[in-house]
Length: 168
Image (cartoon, rainbow, N blue to C red; front, side):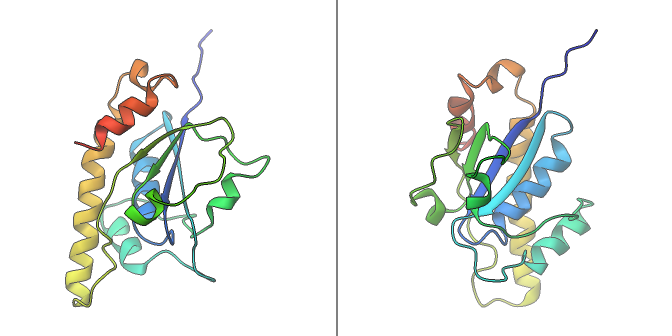
């Protein structure tokens, strides 16, 4: 008889849920195997917000599935019946400073700030490179997260572990 541990649910938050949080969700779902299940949301996605096409392009070029990715409000994760999160990570400074909903189960929290790759007036090639750099930076940090031993992912020490990775 084998015991299977349910995956750790991780929610990545950003303001509009169109770039950084979408990249992190797709990356962790690709890397996390059966140990992690990633989601993303925004504190205030715009009406009819969609994932940034350059972000989707960078993910596809890296061989990471974009299936099912969509921009959504964090309200979807604060209602009864929503997946209960173990860890919530803000990936933009705006979302980190906002008052969050009361999350069921009181998950661990951390802030991993990344510059917004969609900001600026650069050429499409420059913007695409900004998305690629952001994806690469996130991948390095998420590799550290997925390689943590089970003891570092226990709910009682998860917040400390995740916050220490913000310095990586």
